Each structure stands twice: as C-alpha cells, then as structure tokens.
Image (tube, rainbow, N blue to C red; front, side, top):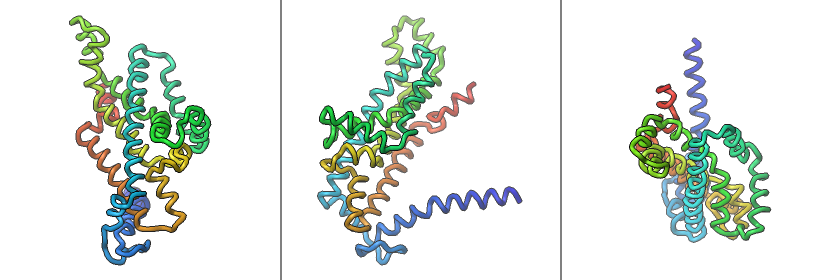
Length: 266
C-alpha cells in the first residue's frame, strides 16, 4: 500500500511539473496569433519569427553573446580560485564558498540593485560587457563548486609521481590537474551558460533597455499581449537546457561530475 502511494505521488509530481511545459509547447505551434491549448491548427511560424524579426533576433544574439561571455568570466575566476584553495588547503575554504552563495540566498532584486549602483560608476550599464560581468560574478560559485569536485577527486599519488619525475607546479597543473578537471570545467561553463541565458533581473537592471536579452524581451512584449512567439522562445529555452546538459551527461560522465565516484572510492 505504501509503495503504491509513493508511485502515485511520484506520478502526480511528474504530471504537475511537466503539464505547463506541454501546454507552452502546444501554444507555440498555434496557426493563428492566439494563445489556445490545444492548438488550433499547426504552424512553426512563431519559431521562424524569432529568427526573422529583428527585435527577437537581436535579443537572441544578445542572450547568446552575453551567456558565452558570462561563462568565460565565471570560469576564469573559478578555476584559479578553486585551485588555490585546493592546493594550499585553505582552512576556511568552506566559508569562502558559503560567501560565494550569498547572491543566491539574497533576493535577486537586491543583488541586481547593488550591481547597478556599482557597475554604473564605471559605465557598466546599457552594454553587453556590463551584463556579462554581472552574470559572471553572480554565477561564479557554480563552476567553482564543480571544479572543486574535480580537484578533490584527483589521486594524490598522481601528483606525487609527477613531482618525483621532476615536474614543477606549473607542469603538474598543465599535465595532470588540468586534464583531470577539464570535464568539470565544461560542466561549470554549461551551468553558467544556461542560467545566464535564463537570467532576467540582472539583465533588466544593467541593460537599461539599451540591451535586451530574450527574458527581458519577453517581459517587454507582455505589455502588448500574450503571443505564441513568447511560448516558442520558452520552448527554445527548454530545448537548449536539455541539449546542453544532455551533452554534459553524454560526454562528461555525469555521475563523476557530481562526485559520485569520488565518494565511492572513499
């Protein structure tokens, strides 16, 4: 009886969480410019509109560019920081990680407002690099945690062997550490990329309507009414996340990325 109840509960959760996705997907293929579900007629014209209408295509280009820049910025900060904390066995490393999680604990509006006040002093509003820097700083903890998992999984005997053969710290990092943590770096970049693509509050505050990412464009379009184009963009977001994390799972050994094999070895 208990087992049946658990199965029913799991299915209810799955249906509750997936139902909005199916509805949005259905709305996105309406033939007419109406938000009907089930769709009345089938058409992919609203997906085409994202690539053919200048405002939507510019927002798509902005989102992709900023997400790539944000991922690179987050990774550039996360890798040396995580490596330094791991190599020198910093006593308060967990405290530093906790501080890095503060932006996620605070309401997004507070974080975005703080960035607006600070970035505005240096002309960091209304342009790509300001938004990308804001996203990179906001998301840096994710790749840092992923890279830390990779560093903790490295067999110390490999490092000792490298040192025995006369390798210095730079050579050891390049030949042993970097190849071992590369999958974790890819996963960290993927997390930062997808979350940057979906981020709204920081983009809204720092963009100042001079730069509109897709989430900001969706918000501004809502003032003109709901259209299937908005639904099609939402579906594209979902597909992008599935593809990116699917590639990470396929080529990056997801259980290892999540630290499962390191825990097993212990």
